[in-house]
Image (tube, rainbow, N blue to C red; front, top):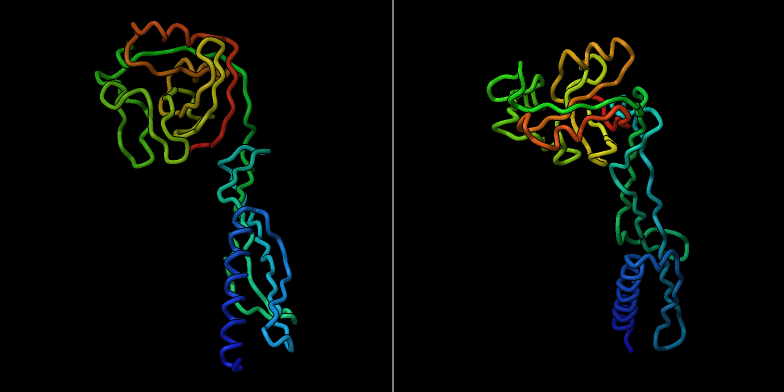
Length: 235
Protein backbone atom coordinates (compact mmCIF):
# COMPACT_ATOMS: atom_id res chain seq x y z
CA UNK A 1 0.00 0.00 0.00
CA UNK A 2 1.29 3.47 -0.84
CA UNK A 3 2.27 5.82 1.99
CA UNK A 4 -0.36 8.39 0.93
CA UNK A 5 -3.14 5.79 1.09
CA UNK A 6 -1.85 4.60 4.48
CA UNK A 7 -1.95 8.13 5.78
CA UNK A 8 -5.54 8.54 4.66
CA UNK A 9 -6.49 5.28 6.37
CA UNK A 10 -4.87 6.29 9.65
CA UNK A 11 -6.59 9.68 9.49
CA UNK A 12 -9.96 7.97 8.82
CA UNK A 13 -9.48 5.63 11.76
CA UNK A 14 -8.54 8.57 14.00
CA UNK A 15 -11.65 10.49 12.99
CA UNK A 16 -13.75 7.39 13.65
CA UNK A 17 -12.25 7.09 17.14
CA UNK A 18 -12.86 10.80 17.84
CA UNK A 19 -16.52 10.42 16.86
CA UNK A 20 -16.85 7.44 19.20
CA UNK A 21 -15.13 9.36 22.01
CA UNK A 22 -17.55 12.26 21.53
CA UNK A 23 -20.53 9.91 21.80
CA UNK A 24 -19.21 8.26 24.95
CA UNK A 25 -18.42 11.63 26.50
CA UNK A 26 -21.99 12.87 25.86
CA UNK A 27 -23.21 9.78 27.75
CA UNK A 28 -20.89 10.56 30.68
CA UNK A 29 -19.21 7.19 30.12
CA UNK A 30 -15.91 8.56 28.85
CA UNK A 31 -13.24 10.50 30.69
CA UNK A 32 -9.83 9.68 29.17
CA UNK A 33 -8.77 6.91 26.82
CA UNK A 34 -5.75 5.92 24.77
CA UNK A 35 -6.17 3.98 21.53
CA UNK A 36 -3.46 2.74 19.19
CA UNK A 37 -4.31 2.62 15.49
CA UNK A 38 -1.97 0.20 13.72
CA UNK A 39 -1.38 0.54 9.97
CA UNK A 40 -1.62 -2.42 7.66
CA UNK A 41 2.09 -3.01 7.05
CA UNK A 42 2.66 -3.46 10.80
CA UNK A 43 5.75 -1.28 10.76
CA UNK A 44 4.37 1.86 12.38
CA UNK A 45 1.76 2.71 15.01
CA UNK A 46 -0.48 5.80 15.07
CA UNK A 47 -1.58 6.84 18.58
CA UNK A 48 -4.82 8.73 19.31
CA UNK A 49 -5.28 10.33 22.74
CA UNK A 50 -8.25 12.23 24.10
CA UNK A 51 -7.99 14.64 26.99
CA UNK A 52 -10.69 16.18 29.17
CA UNK A 53 -10.68 19.99 29.35
CA UNK A 54 -11.83 20.88 32.86
CA UNK A 55 -14.37 23.67 33.15
CA UNK A 56 -13.94 26.57 35.57
CA UNK A 57 -16.40 27.86 38.17
CA UNK A 58 -17.07 31.59 38.11
CA UNK A 59 -18.43 33.01 41.38
CA UNK A 60 -20.05 36.43 41.71
CA UNK A 61 -21.54 38.11 44.79
CA UNK A 62 -25.05 39.53 44.74
CA UNK A 63 -26.64 41.58 47.54
CA UNK A 64 -30.07 40.95 46.03
CA UNK A 65 -29.76 37.33 47.19
CA UNK A 66 -30.01 36.64 50.95
CA UNK A 67 -26.83 35.63 52.75
CA UNK A 68 -26.35 31.87 52.84
CA UNK A 69 -28.13 31.26 49.52
CA UNK A 70 -26.54 30.53 46.16
CA UNK A 71 -28.05 30.44 42.70
CA UNK A 72 -26.59 28.39 39.88
CA UNK A 73 -26.92 30.44 36.71
CA UNK A 74 -25.08 27.96 34.49
CA UNK A 75 -24.22 24.31 35.01
CA UNK A 76 -20.57 23.61 34.19
CA UNK A 77 -19.57 21.04 31.60
CA UNK A 78 -16.12 19.67 30.76
CA UNK A 79 -14.82 19.84 27.21
CA UNK A 80 -12.83 17.27 25.22
CA UNK A 81 -9.76 17.51 22.99
CA UNK A 82 -7.48 15.06 21.24
CA UNK A 83 -3.70 15.18 21.45
CA UNK A 84 -0.64 13.33 20.17
CA UNK A 85 1.71 11.14 22.20
CA UNK A 86 3.60 14.21 23.40
CA UNK A 87 0.51 15.99 24.65
CA UNK A 88 0.30 18.47 21.79
CA UNK A 89 -3.30 19.45 21.10
CA UNK A 90 -4.36 18.36 17.64
CA UNK A 91 -7.92 19.61 17.87
CA UNK A 92 -10.87 20.34 20.14
CA UNK A 93 -13.90 18.08 20.06
CA UNK A 94 -16.02 20.17 22.46
CA UNK A 95 -15.28 23.37 24.33
CA UNK A 96 -15.80 23.48 28.12
CA UNK A 97 -18.73 25.46 29.52
CA UNK A 98 -17.89 27.36 32.70
CA UNK A 99 -20.16 27.06 35.72
CA UNK A 100 -21.63 30.36 36.96
CA UNK A 101 -22.73 30.71 40.58
CA UNK A 102 -24.15 33.75 42.38
CA UNK A 103 -23.47 33.94 46.12
CA UNK A 104 -25.88 35.93 48.27
CA UNK A 105 -24.61 38.74 50.47
CA UNK A 106 -27.98 40.38 51.21
CA UNK A 107 -30.07 40.56 54.38
CA UNK A 108 -31.34 37.46 56.13
CA UNK A 109 -33.93 35.43 54.28
CA UNK A 110 -36.31 33.84 56.77
CA UNK A 111 -39.13 35.41 58.78
CA UNK A 112 -42.24 34.25 60.60
CA UNK A 113 -45.22 36.57 60.77
CA UNK A 114 -48.83 37.06 59.90
CA UNK A 115 -50.78 37.29 56.66
CA UNK A 116 -54.11 38.78 55.70
CA UNK A 117 -55.87 39.16 52.35
CA UNK A 118 -57.35 42.11 50.47
CA UNK A 119 -59.38 42.52 47.29
CA UNK A 120 -58.97 44.92 44.39
CA UNK A 121 -62.25 46.49 45.53
CA UNK A 122 -61.10 47.08 49.11
CA UNK A 123 -61.88 50.33 50.94
CA UNK A 124 -59.12 52.76 50.10
CA UNK A 125 -58.08 50.87 46.94
CA UNK A 126 -58.30 52.57 43.56
CA UNK A 127 -61.21 51.73 41.28
CA UNK A 128 -59.02 49.31 39.32
CA UNK A 129 -56.98 48.06 42.24
CA UNK A 130 -53.75 49.61 40.96
CA UNK A 131 -50.85 48.53 43.19
CA UNK A 132 -48.35 50.92 44.76
CA UNK A 133 -45.24 49.64 42.96
CA UNK A 134 -44.32 50.05 39.32
CA UNK A 135 -43.31 46.90 37.46
CA UNK A 136 -39.70 46.25 36.45
CA UNK A 137 -40.48 48.00 33.16
CA UNK A 138 -41.91 51.04 34.96
CA UNK A 139 -45.55 50.23 34.21
CA UNK A 140 -48.59 50.33 36.47
CA UNK A 141 -50.25 47.04 37.42
CA UNK A 142 -53.99 46.79 38.01
CA UNK A 143 -55.30 43.83 40.00
CA UNK A 144 -58.63 44.09 38.22
CA UNK A 145 -57.26 44.50 34.68
CA UNK A 146 -53.95 42.61 34.88
CA UNK A 147 -54.73 40.02 37.55
CA UNK A 148 -53.42 39.04 40.97
CA UNK A 149 -50.29 37.40 39.54
CA UNK A 150 -47.23 38.90 37.94
CA UNK A 151 -44.90 37.26 35.39
CA UNK A 152 -41.38 37.71 36.72
CA UNK A 153 -38.37 37.26 34.41
CA UNK A 154 -36.68 34.88 36.85
CA UNK A 155 -39.49 33.22 38.80
CA UNK A 156 -42.38 33.08 36.32
CA UNK A 157 -45.98 33.71 37.43
CA UNK A 158 -46.05 34.70 41.10
CA UNK A 159 -48.77 35.97 43.46
CA UNK A 160 -48.88 39.65 44.38
CA UNK A 161 -48.53 40.66 48.02
CA UNK A 162 -48.36 43.91 49.94
CA UNK A 163 -45.68 44.55 52.58
CA UNK A 164 -43.81 47.34 54.31
CA UNK A 165 -41.71 48.69 51.44
CA UNK A 166 -39.07 50.11 53.78
CA UNK A 167 -38.03 46.54 54.62
CA UNK A 168 -39.32 44.57 51.60
CA UNK A 169 -38.79 46.80 48.54
CA UNK A 170 -40.78 46.57 45.32
CA UNK A 171 -39.90 43.47 43.33
CA UNK A 172 -38.86 41.37 46.33
CA UNK A 173 -39.50 37.67 45.69
CA UNK A 174 -40.67 35.60 48.67
CA UNK A 175 -41.47 31.93 49.13
CA UNK A 176 -44.56 31.77 51.35
CA UNK A 177 -45.70 28.86 53.52
CA UNK A 178 -49.25 29.55 54.71
CA UNK A 179 -50.92 26.89 56.92
CA UNK A 180 -54.21 27.17 55.00
CA UNK A 181 -53.08 28.03 51.46
CA UNK A 182 -49.91 25.95 51.36
CA UNK A 183 -46.66 26.99 49.72
CA UNK A 184 -46.39 29.48 46.87
CA UNK A 185 -44.08 32.19 45.54
CA UNK A 186 -45.05 35.84 45.72
CA UNK A 187 -43.73 39.25 44.73
CA UNK A 188 -44.03 42.49 46.70
CA UNK A 189 -45.87 45.01 44.50
CA UNK A 190 -48.06 46.80 47.02
CA UNK A 191 -48.10 48.21 50.53
CA UNK A 192 -50.50 49.40 53.20
CA UNK A 193 -50.66 51.28 56.47
CA UNK A 194 -51.32 48.13 58.52
CA UNK A 195 -48.11 46.52 57.25
CA UNK A 196 -46.10 49.63 58.03
CA UNK A 197 -47.53 49.98 61.55
CA UNK A 198 -46.92 46.30 62.33
CA UNK A 199 -43.33 46.43 61.10
CA UNK A 200 -42.71 49.39 63.43
CA UNK A 201 -43.78 47.03 66.26
CA UNK A 202 -41.44 44.30 65.03
CA UNK A 203 -44.22 42.25 63.40
CA UNK A 204 -43.86 40.92 59.87
CA UNK A 205 -47.24 41.41 58.17
CA UNK A 206 -48.02 40.78 54.51
CA UNK A 207 -51.31 41.14 52.64
CA UNK A 208 -52.15 38.75 49.78
CA UNK A 209 -53.98 40.24 46.79
CA UNK A 210 -57.32 38.89 45.50
CA UNK A 211 -59.71 40.13 42.82
CA UNK A 212 -62.52 40.80 45.30
CA UNK A 213 -63.11 41.18 49.00
CA UNK A 214 -65.89 38.60 48.59
CA UNK A 215 -63.52 35.84 47.44
CA UNK A 216 -63.83 33.01 50.04
CA UNK A 217 -60.11 32.23 49.71
CA UNK A 218 -59.29 35.70 50.98
CA UNK A 219 -60.22 34.70 54.51
CA UNK A 220 -58.20 31.48 54.29
CA UNK A 221 -55.12 33.64 53.85
CA UNK A 222 -55.46 34.99 57.39
CA UNK A 223 -52.89 33.42 59.68
CA UNK A 224 -50.49 34.49 62.42
CA UNK A 225 -47.98 31.73 61.70
CA UNK A 226 -46.81 32.21 58.13
CA UNK A 227 -43.24 31.46 57.09
CA UNK A 228 -41.58 33.87 54.66
CA UNK A 229 -38.32 33.11 52.87
CA UNK A 230 -36.87 35.91 50.72
CA UNK A 231 -35.34 34.72 47.46
CA UNK A 232 -34.51 38.11 45.95
CA UNK A 233 -34.38 41.59 47.41
CA UNK A 234 -36.14 44.09 45.11
CA UNK A 235 -35.73 44.32 41.37
